[in-house]
Image (cartoon, rainbow, N blue to C red):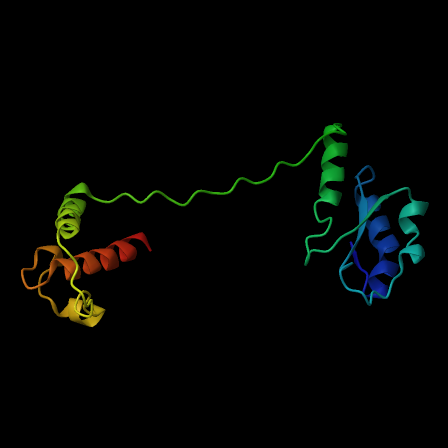
Length: 167
């Protein structure tokens, strides 16, 4: 690999290639120039002839823009397996982990939600949710059963607790 923005890296490719071939005579080799996304490349495509002299595969890539990044690896994989039709498969999107909530903890919250659905909402909602600081002032570890909280406050607290459990 050489950097098309640095001439010295292109000039070193023959030395690097001969060093590798001296140690591993039958190794597969690919030459590729990186940073092709940079318009001010110091090395022009027509000046890169080493790969032609040695009959090596050549690619232009950009790691930054992901341009042709997989091509040298795909070429090597095809040569190593002897399968010219080999293709890389797309990595599947990973599903988020499943959230498992203790049924004993969820039951009172579900009950509070059922009760909340049966109660009409007030015209003004300023008093529905108290601040987190106010919620922390409560002495009960399970605020859903706290008699001083309105159903709306319990629902808001439930949502806060659920969001913390899922975070």
